[in-house]
Amino acid sequence: MKALVFQGPGQTAWTDVPDPSIKDAADAIVRVDTVTICGTDLHIVKGDVPEVTPGRVLGHEAVGTVVETGGDVRTVRPGDRVLISCISACGRCRFCREGRYGQCLGGGGWVLGHTVDGTQAEYVRVPFADLSVHPLPSTVDTYDALLLADIFPTAYEVGVVNGRVRPGDTVVVVGAGPIGLAAIVTAQLYSPGRIIAVDLAEPRLTAARSLGADATVRADEGPERLVADLTEELGADVVIEAVGVPESFEMCTRMVRPGGRVANVGVHGEPVTLHLEDLWIKDVTITTGLVDAYSTPMLLRMMADGRLPAASLITHRFELRQMEEAYDVFSHAGETSALKVALGGPQHNAVTVASQV
Image 1: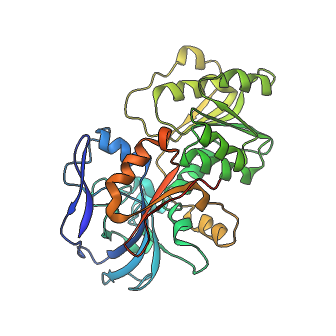
Image 2: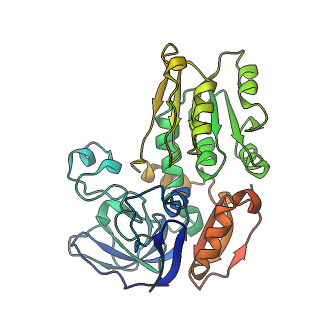
């Protein structure tokens, strides 16, 4: 089969690799129908995630069709259309029993495209299939479902829930890429007083406004001043970092009020300075985290009921064989205005679509 293979920092190839096979009775083999590229994949390609070694098939988000299952799999069978979660869970270890699947000690956690071959391929082996894939209702579109593999659970759990968004809060989302936009959508479940989006790209700020942001500001045009003006100099109750660079994290700590919360979602590839000389007296809570994907069933129900906008985040579509072109478009989002790219099999016509947000 064909797959996107990491060959070392700055190097990938869409090339032939062996077909996956059942290695454990809890495995499922899934034909990849639709897959996407994550900002974390870009970090891997840069060399920021040293656990990913040359030869690894990348990718951890997909929707597909089950073609084979191991003898212990009970919840899906060949022919089922499924969402592949970015997190695999053994279901037995201490952390899985606590619902902290991202920290699984039994061979799960974030493994796809990280420590085992991932989803940017024609087929993928999914470990612990009973807890790691979700059968899709017929009412849920394949491209909509794709954003439940990582984007929406991550934004909701690591951003909104960790940040403890409450009714009436002023929430600032720094970074209006897919994760930031999903944070804007899911923060509204808690009725904040206002949501402010910060980004460098005007198309992303336009998308943020269409998805519910009450105010937007370019990152280079005084977001700290705007937040101060809108909060009577107090600062934001919750600031969600959805970029993953030192400058954006430090900006977040400057915009949060005393007693407020900074929820870091972005994947950082280099050290960040924590200015405790300023923060020690402010009683600020800073959270980090890897998604556990415990919220996926709830978000899937919301999507099936038409209460979760998703497809509008997908701005570019390609065939699977155009994987390298898709990476180029996604990695140059400032010039291409890409929010999220999706790739389908040859049954899908390759098309680049304008943002519908």
